[in-house]
Amino acid sequence: MKKVRLKELESRLQQVDGFEKPKLLLEQYPTRPHIAACMLYTIHNTYDDIENKVVADLGCGCGVLSIGTAMLGAELCVGFDIDEDALEIFNRNAEEFELQILTWFNVLCAYYLTECPSHSIQYYESSLWDQK
Image (cartoon, rainbow, N blue to C red; front, side, top):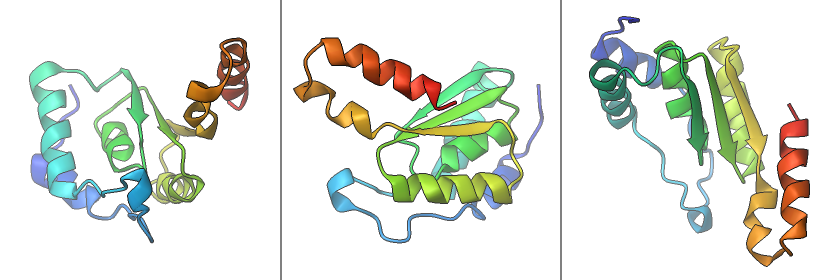
């Protein structure tokens, strides 16, 4: 199991850039480095559910949890969000930390699924995965 001390993880997560202008309608509340580090540390050390795993970060925002999972040895972490501005910051953060196992998808289409006919869902799912 990859060993990272809690304080080290928190210190590194403090370097992750957050929202420039949080959008309250999208409920963009930043995950503080202390909370993120404690949560990820517990998941990693108590349940062994990060290292060598594929992680989906739903509503990833700027990527603090995704980056944390990468630091703890996730095989792949995929962030999903509907806000292009947040995903832009996510991408910059991933590049700054030089993490190759991170990827993201703009799932704006998922917002509209509730109003789309059921036959449209297949299109959205396939177009989402085709972006990779």
